[in-house]
Amino acid sequence: MKAFTLFFASIFIILFGLNAVLASSDSGSVNSSDKYAWSENMGWINFACDSCRVNINDQQLSGYAWSDNYGWINLAPSLAGVHNNGEGVLSGKAWGEKVGWIDFFGVTIDQQGIFHGYADGDNSGQISFNCNNDNSCVLSSFRIGTDWRPASTRKSSAASPTYFVGTSANNQYVPMGEKKQVGEITASGYNVIMYVNSELLFETTSSNSNNKAQYILQVSNINLVNKKINFKVSDKLSISLDLNDSKKVDLDGDNIADIEIKFDKLIVNEAEITIKSLSESEKNIDAILDGTCLDNVDKIIKINNLSMYSKLKGRIIINVEDNGRAYYISPIKKEMYFLCNPEYAFSVMHERGFGITNANLKKIAEYSGQPGVDNYFSLKQRGKIFLQVEQKGEAWYVYPLDKFRYYLGRPADAFKVMKGLGLGINNKNFKLLLGAATK
Image (tube, rainbow, N blue to C red; front, side):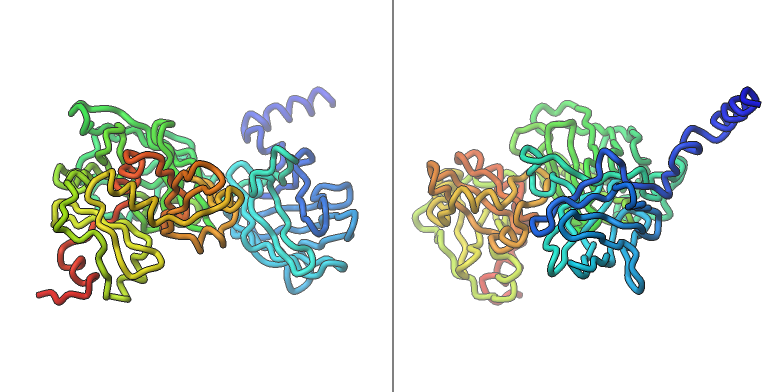
């Protein structure tokens, strides 16, 4: 009988796969090795104690978490509960007799079953599910993990998207964890649907040598809550885009952009981008600050269009119909500064900068594709230039769109920031910004 049972089990594994006899990925529990969350108010919270019986499925979380200081937390109380949208985006509320309601909005579970983000309550305070939330793993390593997986990760790799929304006539689909080769990227480009760890292999002609080179574009993270996508390009460049945002990318380090990437669509954890090469005229737009600073050219220009100023303050704009002239729009005054060459641009950055302590500077994430340490503080600093008063006056620019800080160490560094983050504007809109009449 025992031999028959072993034989039957072996056949079952062969026919249905190992996962069929292990914990099912569409209904899981919390890992015994990754079971603690942390709250400054409550201390350690155990999600995998002997009596917790936490279950995670595509609709909800159930069971209990345990706090030595505050007792049981019910994940599925009557008339409430913690909900799962099937892709690891949690919402809803848990209940503790001693702490009240705990809101799980902002907590996510990634493709590897690892929790991220914070739950929050009036009495519990913030509950962190992963020490990487605030880069505190060096002090204390903890996280919550599960064998449940998002529904899309359980789909067959043969699945294909229902539609593309990008402007290119060429479409490509790259399943999760797979690679696709598309050959040379041209000005017509590709609409590409990708997932985390999808890789797009492409070629483009270098503006530096006019030779073709191959690159790998990998999706490193998709933030469903903030609608943000992070890429790596051949493990050398990191790119972060908000939904509907685009960015020009210098692949070969010659200070001239080679391709443009736009984040077009996000459905659950399926992201669509458009990637295209740049024409010579578009590349020339990015070759800014190549002029000289003439004495008869105004370098401080008043802005009278309040509506446009409110949308553009803190941005660097490039007049694409006036030899690519670049301007920095003050985030606090209705004026902008003509950046006529790298040296003058560098001096503007320092003269218009605000002093900042090291402690406050650390609240703003350096550009790396990772969330800021203090998102509210970062939000208030958008478009500002900061000088480290406790160091040697090092300068940083906080880009308004992604709220990351970019280093302005030398004129060449400031030049690269302006080239990469500048917004193109035509003569008509430039005059409108000034408040001048247009035909």
